[in-house]
Image (cartoon, rainbow, N blue to C red):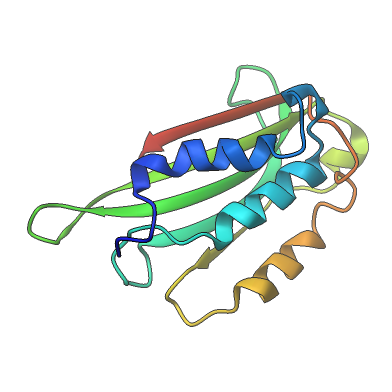
Length: 153
């Protein structure tokens, strides 16, 4: 798959999608981050053509990952990484975390998560449309904190 980007390029490509049309991170809204994530999610990478090698995760809830409780929307891309023999070795996740100060209307949303996997005979447009129904309360808001990072899992 020479025309597909390598997994090592994923974080940089997500960052590039996020800055498209934005002069700095303080301008990002949930809507602009979501639209960037959908563009990033449509791009295929050089992964094995197996049902769990390239996944998208949309999740939210009130968590204290950074030490204090925040309402967090986590937009994640997960890639399966194989060893030299072609066997599964581990996963790499690329995250865009949007954090908001706790508010009763956000807390009332509870928590939610949903996965989509390329090459698993599912419709990406249908998944994106279904996920867009969840953050309606958040779309126009600016997150208090934004964190882009990559981690092995």
